[in-house]
Image (tube, rainbow, N blue to C red; front, side, top):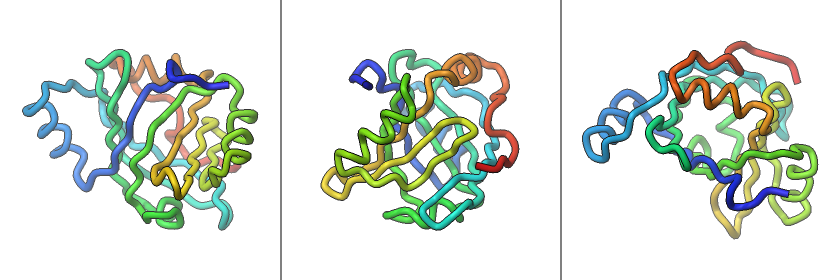
Amino acid sequence: MISEVDLFHTGYVVSDIAASMRTLTDAIGYEWASVADVTRSVNTDQGLLPRRSLVSYTSNTPEHHIELMQLIDGSAWERMPRGSDLPHIGYWSGDFDEDVHRLQRAGFRLYMLDSESSTSYHHNAAFGYYVEFVNVRDRPLIQAWIEGSALTIGQTDSAV
């Protein structure tokens, strides 16, 4: 079961990731992981669809990161409520399958599931935002990316 200590990021979709990063650096002093160009195939309620986005996390906020995403190929995103506007809170999940099912039992609809990286997006109309689960097994790879390494997950299409 997840807890508040598993909350590790808040994500925002932006139209220009480079400009948004500069703006937040100038205004708040954020530093950023290198921008990753991430392409994956994800299982949606309308079948397997591509998802491509440019992504970065703040690197100087060790407890809670800000994630910026610029959608390049939004076909998977566009089938979700709110279209490509995807504000969300992201949690590490130590028991991915159980956490996904627990949110579904609590009334959150599963909109997107990426089996390669064990990432899922859930939405509840009463809450109004998305909850994302990221399998904790990917934490070392994501932390290494935030600290300056290349991101090594989600770089190519994969079948679900």
